[in-house]
View (cartoon, one colour):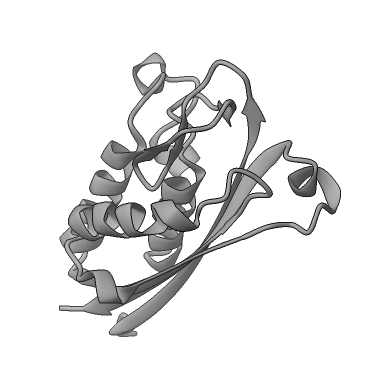
Length: 162
């Protein structure tokens, strides 16, 4: 059976907001009194994006490739994870066509940071900014996300065979 020429993948990630950590989303530091808790820099946007690419490739998630029990991944810049995942796609003959991302955060308000995030992701993925859908929404003060206990992200990607 032939491998499909087009593949889609979906990723999701969620991290708790805590004091004493930087808030990093899409590789961009966002000024906020709380940051995301995690073994790496806890960039849940990049984590969801990397998982969407891995899913499209039918590979295990980032926890398999960058386990939290490995001390070398402590405080790891998630851009390194994304770069490695993009290389995995390239090694299998796939190129990223486009991505669509949604950040769910009650606070901070992220609208003014979206252009910088889009520019950074464009550079990391080697795709034009107009191939990156990026949205931020709140959780309408419902549940743990609405109580500002964490930030969640969804990512969808389209890969095509070279």
